[in-house]
Amino acid sequence: MSTILPNSKEKENEKSNSRMLQFFTQAKIGTFLHQANIHKAKGFSPRLIVQFIFTLVLHGMGFSRALESDRLPKDFEKDTVYAFLKSPTYNWRKFLASVGSYLIAKFLLPLTSDDRDRVLIFDDSLFSRNRSKAVELLAKVKDHTTGRYFKGFRMLTLGWSDGGSFMPLAFSLLSSKNDKNRYQDINSSIDKRTVGYRRRQEATKKSTETMFDLLDSINPKRLGAKTVLFDSWFAYPAILSKIVKNYSLHAVCMIKNSPKIHYTFEDQKYTLSQLYKKVRKKRGRAKILASIVVGLGHDDENGHEIQARIVFVRDRNRSRKWLALLTTNLEHTEEDAVRIYGKRWAIECFFKVAKSNLWLAKEFQCRSYDSMTAHTTIVFLRYMMLSLSVREEEDPRTIGQLFFLCCDEMEDLRFAQVLMTILELLGSTMAEEYLLTDEQINNFFERFFNKLPDYLRNPLLQIGAA
Image (cartoon, rainbow, N blue to C red; front, side):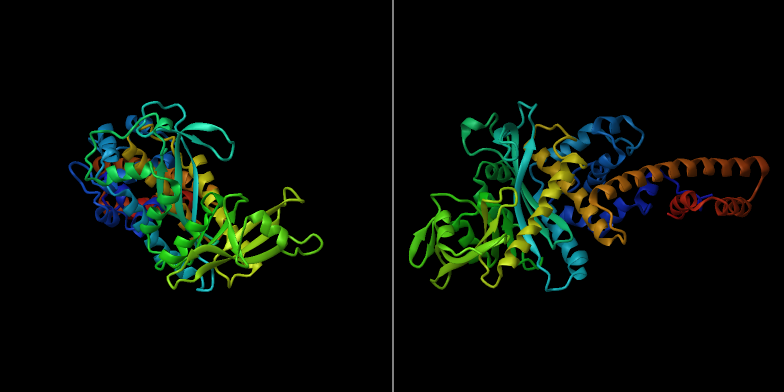
């Protein structure tokens, strides 16, 4: 009867070819966990713990409910998970960047031509913990969407996109640089030699400084990226110049009309609104109004001032107003700058799915900064699986549709495992009561399976062959 059902439940879970387990194999999760110093101290392996947390959202249950269910390995306890998440020695940023970079280089880059623009995208989003009080480094932060203040963090995220797929590569949960805006400080018991302590120090830096820490964690050349996209919050001449000079990348961004920011044109300093008055606009209802080449006021490695093209476009929400885009690549036409900046929308869709479907900041209510970092990494890992699956699927399903398909798949496998257990007991009973041989019993089940419809037969055969 061993040909019908594996001997143990753990063996079934390891060998069943579900979408989730296939992704864990594709992404080499175990290998990259080891490389990020995420090792087994005692008890269960890190891969098994990550796999358990990863599947919670697919089962539609929280951590507490999962502990009460029969889906856990033997001797798996709550403290096992919490101790794993709270470790300050685990390098979660290296793990996430390694997995994302490998998937991009192995599976996504071969799918597109070299002429297609691959970009890196920076943006931040609210990581809300509004009902918390004792969370480490909890701060008062502003939600730029609503203009209101909340308790929580600003989740600064770096991602990669080719216009078809988005992969999150690195993030930092930013607290506040101002002590008065922080409700809690760094845990004094954290060893200052650990990567966890460095994460906490980074959380109190300015976002314009942290963005370069995130950029240092990846290799843009390996990812085929030549351009960085971001919103006007990071669009300062000093930031743009550093990206061009130190990282050999170009930037395309929205820029804000500030009286404190000046650009060089014809050896004079001008604000953005002054430049708009100087350029000649296109007639009629043109969407692109004008463009102008300016200097950023900083020199490159050869001592020449770094140049950029500013493109003025009509604000579609306010017809008499205008917006301005900037590109440091002078080979970009006006249309190129607008088209490439449009790829930034991929990160907004990512934030929506992570919060609405993947339970970002909702699944675990931990107080430790390391726990929040670890769980956010696993949420990003879930999105990687969905993003890769959407790219490999033949039909045009969205990320959200594919997420619910994965949830259904987990329940189908669960049902198939229960049914196969019943069939295993039936076969054993037939062998004992009617003295049938294994060959006779297997022939009976083979005829039984052949009469089942495909949607029932395939999951059963998949588990039986595992």
